[in-house]
Image (cartoon, rainbow, N blue to C red; front, side, top):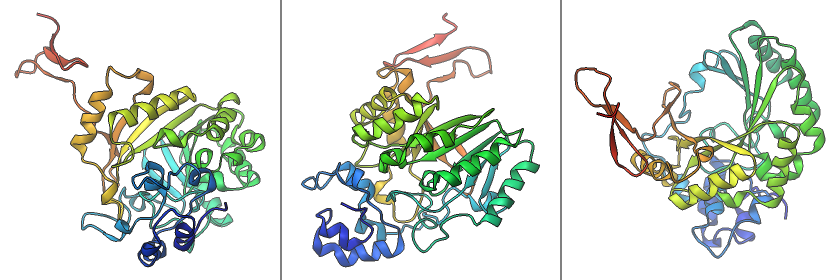
Length: 349
């Protein structure tokens, strides 16, 4: 099966009812569609609530745009001094190399700027200006390669970008955000892995995974090729209604990640991207889920539950709170809650 890129192909292969084709064509006209075979194979066509399909198969609910939803929900544009750069935090920047992905998530916060009909990649001139920006800003300690998905680029181009970053002395860490090990695991070749490692810098790869079933044998092998080469792996996940918003789904996901030598990093609250309200949970529900994981799941498996504040104000942790002052006068007495919900004085009385 090739990658499915149209609503008609989605229906032809049985991933959506044929009578929904006109509405799904309207969805596909607005938001990019790509369902690669590695993920299509994981979908149970007999399950109308399949968590893999819910992430990647277009849904007529995407035509419902709510008033609070935003084209740029995390405010990248407000912090983009030159094309391809987002400099929101003092010591790090995003370098958006491409607007193409191996798969298009139905909840993507950049869904208005990725996919066919959008600029595919930074032009050579734009990339040069972006790299010049990094060179002249000595406070930049970390560069995050994102997009789109940087690992859809050729090995030659990735190697060239990594070589440019290796030559910038004040850049010490390069982090790569990607879905490719899940969506197209065969693309993670030994040659590509070698291109990601550069002398004198620490390379991290953050893999986007939302459900344990995405971690197929092929995906696990792709991640192992990077881990075996000494590249630390992190995971970013999004809390999604009907996909991973139960304690068991999160336990299965986080344990599977750690078993693959991937450290859960962030669990993102769903962004206010257009047409995604059917996939968003409430914050209180997310906090309750995190509370149920605490103490019942190894600390290795605990991500930070975070919200990207709309308007470009950055991420804030929004997990449950376990401590409060025990006295109102600002003293050093606290009440701390344990993982069973019992409350304790600290220091003990």
